[in-house]
Image (cartoon, rainbow, N blue to C red; front, side, top):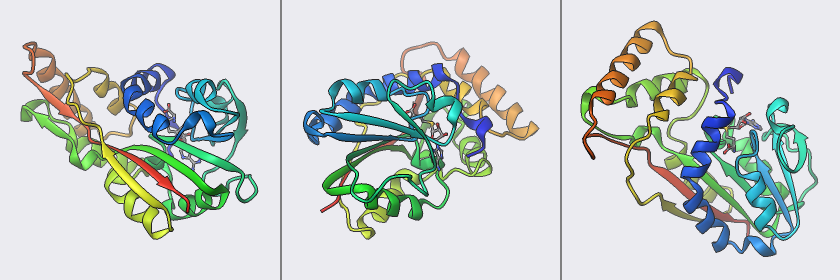
Amino acid sequence: MNTSALPDKNLLEAQAAWLAPARGRLLRRVGVARRRRILDLGAGYGAATGELARRGGGVVVALDRAFTAVSQTPALNVNGDARHLPFQNETFDLVFCQCVLLWVREIQTAVTEIHRILQPGGVLIALEPDYAGLIEQPPQAATRDLWLAALARAGAEPEIGRKLPGILAAQGFDVRVDLLESVERPSPTRFDFLRTLPLTPDEQSALARAEEAAHRLTDAWAQIAHLPFFLITAVRP
Ligand SMILES: C[S@@+](CC[C@H](N)C(=O)[O-])C[C@H]1O[C@@H](n2cnc3c(N)ncnc32)[C@H](O)[C@@H]1O
């Protein structure tokens, strides 16, 4: 990941708050209260780590490759890379990823590592977006093409949501996929997120035009900006 692409703490916390109901459902479904060893993989500043610690039934480890971020999490901190996890085989019974696998290059290596460190019966929960499926209205306020170009330039996989279930199934996981079901009024912070990515001068101008168009649309439901999120539970048999 281009480290300049790590959004600031407030943006990540806003995103985590938006995903809270979906995250809560996934955690309940896998029986988080009886999970004894939980890894928050790509924990960032720990936007979900506190919740995992509160709801989980044991130890939570927060791992990230950005040490300055992970050192602020309310958990046991580990600086490390998803592609070479510094844990023994079958260490965890829950691995949690929120908006992380999007950024991991060599996703296959990371999935093999997640499988290796999960115990049999252990589960991966992944909440990952699918930018190619971004639904926007009206066209003057649309930013999908900017996202796709800038994410690819930053080394991310904009279609991770739709690609991940197949990658996990091929690794031997039992996969279940849900989607974020409700379309909400778009948040202006989506433009701030996009500005954290490497944009060309032309793209910066296009972003400014889209933001201005969105700003003028004040009526309820005058605009739509729905980013599909894939909500994945993958059990290691
Ligand atoms: C968008 S942030 C999400 C952080 C946190 N999960 C949250 O929801 O606030 C993505 C995080 O993934 C981390 N990351 C990216 N590639 C990684 C890798 N290969 N190994 C470990 N962490 C990685 C980044 O450093 C960053 O903190």
